[in-house]
Image (tube, rainbow over all chains, first blue to last red; front, top):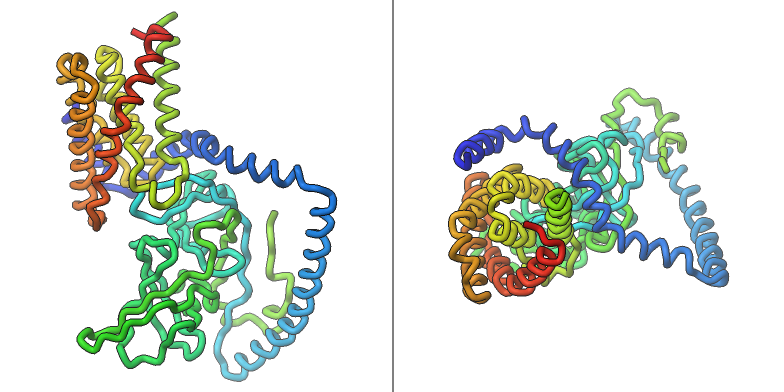
Length: 277
Length: 160
């Protein structure tokens, strides 16, 4: 019986794509376990949200108001800049992407296999999530969706050892690849020649090459460069900007397809950015 | 009536093991996490060999795979295997003193991890460091308290 089971399993193993339906079925069954694990943290948040003093709430309200005002002020400038940008792009005959749609998802605080960096989100295919979407938080890129189940989805963080992310140095748009190292605060930047113009403190942004990630979002800051003349490439490490370990809510982005024929007026229309929840 | 109740208790201990498998921990302790589900499975295979066997082990492993987002089937294979070995050895291991039991648990978990290492190696995602083997050691160290607790539970509810 054991051998029968094992053989059946091995066959199913090799045909991973045939197993997706079984896996998503099982994932719905284990969802109660996952939410049970998530419960203490969730109730902690709930408590701290409910047992705050009136004064603290008022203070928070004031600071949020100030922040909102500041954001609106910046947005005013952004609108004009965006219009100008798309006008210039049209002059150059190059296409620009329309704005991305995002939804907010919450992380389930569960641990996965010890040698990978993956997280579970509480939005799944029922919310329209699909494989390959970028996830980000307020500060930068976090990772991408690698598996979608009906009510949950699995995302691979950019620090996962099997993740590679096309980036560009913001200062001079030098292109590079950022590899995960399984350490939460470290990315390895590979194949940069020793004499390349890159220094500690440089900001890396997504380059948009590869088509998975929207271009222009901050990813990491160069933290360490070792130039060893013996080696063909410099050894460079970067520290991610996004709160990979502490984010509770993340954004799942829908990257819109290339808008070749989009008129200028549409891409500067603020209503294209849509936010659920 | 009694067997039915016993079934629920066994089920609950497995759920508890699943919860412990994915409960979030600080970075340095994650590598030390014992194979909870395997420990519980070994205990029940030893205590109730007529009821818990390879089939239950296989299903347990399948759930661990889904929870840990691994290749579907790797833990199922390994857990089925250790259930099989435990069933063969249960008469001997049951009368061992507790530290000797812990030693056999160490060997069982190493076997389990070895199987998973093979599967991982074949599918091209083998772990890079020796810390992969730490769970075997911690599982051995945690075995005596787990064993005593589960035995208390079993005697309290008179599961046979």
